[in-house]
Length: 320
Image (cartoon, rainbow, N blue to C red; front, side):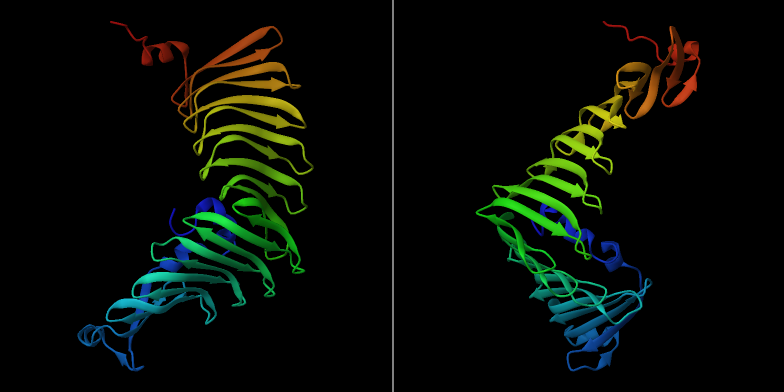
């Protein structure tokens, strides 16, 4: 569980201005600066021991500066915001080993900072609100969250994790609550996401970093939207959909794909359709119930066909 465990750090990482891919753009200009501050050619840079700084201008307008000693990254590597001198990200290296990573707000003030041990495990994580007020301090051991302290924009502690147990509250730059995470034995076991008005958006269970169990989603106002069954990060089992508080569908999933017969309802219990799925494509009969009549359509790998065509394309298997 190197760098930051995704289940414990997804919210602050999503808050970074711009996608991480922006930090790996196409280079349109590259400049070499000797350790004494003199620009040199690439050839001279290599001959003189690769000591100093390499400056790259990317196609997206981001400027990257990397510091080297004897050809090994040592010191700070920085990324600017696009077409700006303001620093968006700072990585600190010691003899090629990353020891710290900091992401900044668009204003250039720190947003999040992670410290690493020599094996790449996070040891400490710091977060701030955009005005500089501390937001969170977390201490990790071997990838597990040991302790944490979380503050609201008024600098008041609103939740804690102690000895690997507790509640973590994460807010966005406007101070709105994004998530509430239940931590047990150093891992997140449940995450509640919220709408901007404070209503719950979803409640997701986790087991060892993977979505596992019954995941519930909600409409604004609190009415249920879906009840999903998950197994090791994949939908597995029946997902039930709701509208206006009533059940509208039951969809079977296997290994994250629709597979089996989906049932659709009216008024919460009156069956109106049966849709057959095979690995996320309609495949087989699609029955529509109208009063006492049944209308049946046939699908082969997502395409509507006649019943004779379906039977010709899908001959029964002969057991030997």
